[in-house]
Image 1 (spheres, helix red, strand yellow):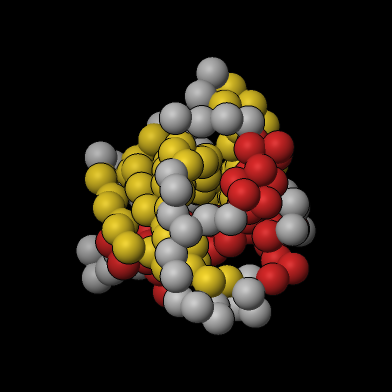
Image 2 (spheres, rainbow, N blue to C red):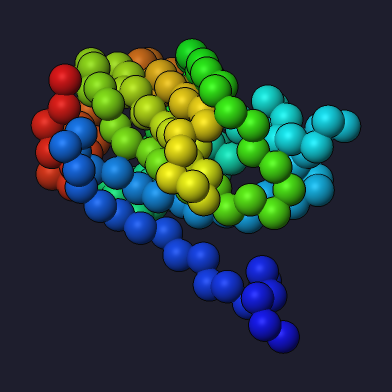
Length: 156
């Protein structure tokens, strides 16, 4: 079969641009992600960004998956999205994730939803708090910050 969407290999990508390191998660939009109007529902942007940010952690931050859920968990305390253009069925979308800020107890991941015409259709920001499982204390340990900075570079 020629031009079969399912035969296309979709690969993640790590790159750098003038804003720093980014992680791209390409995905193909299916019917289950659409509203009755035929475009991607606002709630589904959160699901797409959630998956992309987990893959970002796994691929870009050394040691990210070793202790998550055992020694620490990551709590999203703020999430916002802005929309400028609709995304539709069978569109290939790149969810681009980057670390935009590192604080004492939290970090911010920013995202862009880029369509196949290379147009940014929506943006996202998540403020994520590092919480110690045993003590329930907020605050990122030095090793976590150093791992992020080593992989990504300093931000802020």
